[in-house]
Length: 462
Image (cartoon, rainbow, N blue to C red):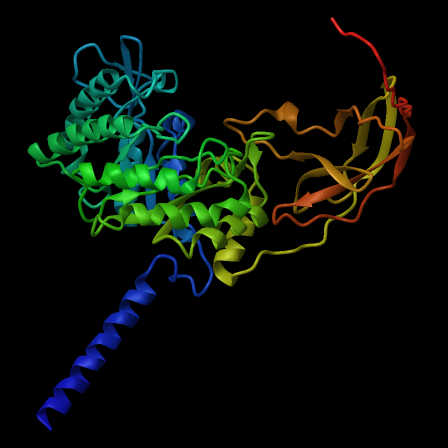
């Protein structure tokens, strides 16, 4: 009888523990649809932000159930010069962007809102040109990062102990540059130099690294195997985070490749107990360097969420925040966070489409905005019902206002079967929804004549 009672109590405890873990999981915190729980912020964008701007930014994030912020570089090195975003006491280092200290402003507001901040100590942009075999260069960069990390910890951690949560490893590894076991061995050594230093200083916080991948440079299995080797050689511990970029925004992975790559990479940390596996979803489009409408971004989250413990993004603050772009992106995402679906407001159709020949078989396409531009984030241009161009609202920082134009030039392909093309324009909404097409305009193009097949006999070619 006693054994039966003990079994029942144990069973109830296990059920309660499971329920607690399930509902506390970041991906389950918002019912049965995935959301992002954090964002990267590059500090150059914040160079003119005052405390109110930071407060607004973090409230936008908090209201969308985000709690993690990754500040990429507290300092940057170029040649023999190191510039810092904060006032450093290290000899020879120079503070940039006036007296504003964006790190302090971020940490102060994060502390008030119970948000967690990862900080990248230093980055040298020569990384993109230095070969992976040059381990002495990387080791020297890590040594500099160690000194800066020590200064950052002493300067801010005791003041903002809840907000200053972790470190960001700023050197982004990829499978085009790092292909050999020997290269991952050297990388593991460099990472250990960093981890061991932080341990020796008692400044060891959770560390997040966010590599990327390129399906044209290798397979998911190969990349996973290399990371598994690295993790077997490094001193990562429970709470550290492996957070690969999904590489969709940069065009290095297609949407249909995402799930298989994350599934493979998950296996790389299988022998590293307690290490977390996150995704870094990209909410931009490399083709026009613009914010991507929400429908594609949510497809990324849906594909990645079964494979990972959590999802953050690059970057809500840069591409969706009202601090840097039209508030419509934030409103659409907030609607999704609350309801699990995107708003699909009706869009008015663009007007006055005209297509004029600039020269032979080259056309200038122009149109006018619809009367009502509410909920509009851009336009889509179609040729014979095939999308050929997408024009999207530009960011305040990092965007180019000239890119948001109601004029484009098109040179259609010529072939033997097509003597004309028909153009239409649609309005594009923040959710990725589109309006009905505009008036259609058809233009004539040259038809390429099919060349006869020639068979040469008894000819010598020299």
